[in-house]
Amino acid sequence: MQDWGAKAKVVLNKTQPEKLKKHEQERDFFCVVSDAFRIFARRCSMMLGSAWAFVGAVLVILVWLLTGPMFHFSDTWQLIIYTATTIITFLMVFLIQNTQNRDAKAVHLKLDELIRAMKGACNQLVDLENLSD
Image (tube, rainbow, N blue to C red; front, side, top):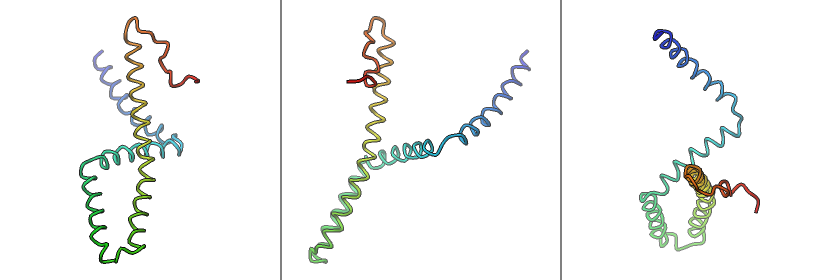
């Protein structure tokens, strides 16, 4: 009897990776892009939210300020920092929004689970975010 169970586990372990590969191939393009962006946004938020990123930004500004006299504080010198900060701000808005959405969803799921798990808790407002105004 134990031998049959061991054989079943071996067969199960062999077919599981095959099923995962098949499922991965069936995923549409938008799922792949969404997953890639989620991973990218998570890694970026970890890196860009660190003290080292802040130090790097301060160093970039200091270098820009120190090069001002060399370029006679020209319009081009100003345009460089304005353009760079605008582009970075524009891209960071999407990363911050993605992180906020993920965090809010996690908090809602955890709170809903706590409400459902408590005996006597009023669970009429569970999934309130999905209801109409």
